[in-house]
View 1 (cartoon, helix red, strand yellow):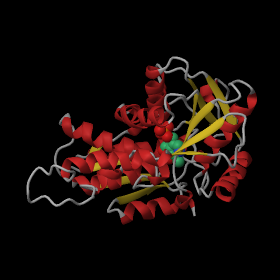
View 2 (cartoon, rainbow, N blue to C red; view 1 turned 60 degrees about the horizontal axis):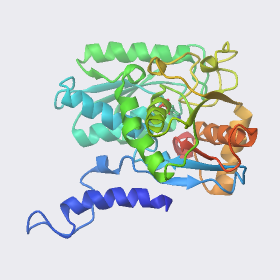
View 3 (tube, rainbow, N blue to C red; view 1 turned 90 degrees about the vertical axis):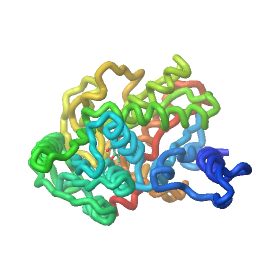
View 4 (tube, protein in one colour; view 1 turned 45 degrees about the horizontal axis):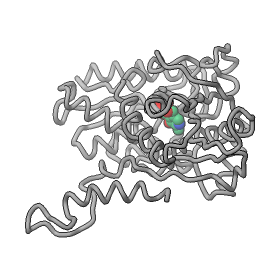
Length: 339
Ligand SMILES: Cc1ncc(COP(=O)(O)O)c(C=O)c1O
């Protein structure tokens, strides 16, 4: 049932080009995607019934199956398409972005297929495997020294240094600066695709959505769509236990293992959105949950995915929802990015 979403997307796509009534008699009845762009999104939803036996059910979206290995492919595609159609990005113009790796991989995939040179600016604290992946996809990778973080632990100040380098580089090269933290196309992508898919895959029965926050695009986009379908859906933000500005708490330490999230400040895309609750996950909890997801479910995912699952389990067990509540969350990226 869960897998039905991905093939059905392809079927409708292929039906147009092959199907029973080909547009031209030369068209062969093959089953293929027109480009890698057609492989973005429409990911399956998996029930995590081995790691969580109740109360309630946890269903996780397999975003690691996107071609760039994370949910950021969706935002990357929408950002490039919106920039092209609004005239902010000309054909063959260079694209620049500060990235913790996943947006960079997504942009590298999309830029390769749309003929835009791509420069990724990344803190040296992010995993080197991410830089290698982007380079393999044809991107130029510029690494920025850390200010106060350490390898594997990227702080808000590290991120700010990378943001500044990216905007300077974009100006130097007359490039389009993606600026994902301020780009509303990311929210639109998740509203139009991820949120819509979750609602459909849960048969409209989802009671809560649980999500860690980097730019906020995925939480705000999915949350906006789910609330447009039912005012009863509850949205929960996940934060590292030591860095909880969204919960209104002072930041004890911005050094944590949930790469891509929890930068110690409220992201601009968060403006105007209110969640129903906040959940905290410690580094140790996320690491233990990552191990359990591998051993029990056969899913090797990154630590933000593990934090999402850990927080979903805490919520389901807290008594705040009904005993058979359906909780949806995201498996944001593959664990292979961190080895
Ligand atoms: C691994 C990972 N998890 C979660 C997030 C947070 O996603 P968003 O920026 O949509 O809030 C990111 C963002 O880069 C990420 O890389």
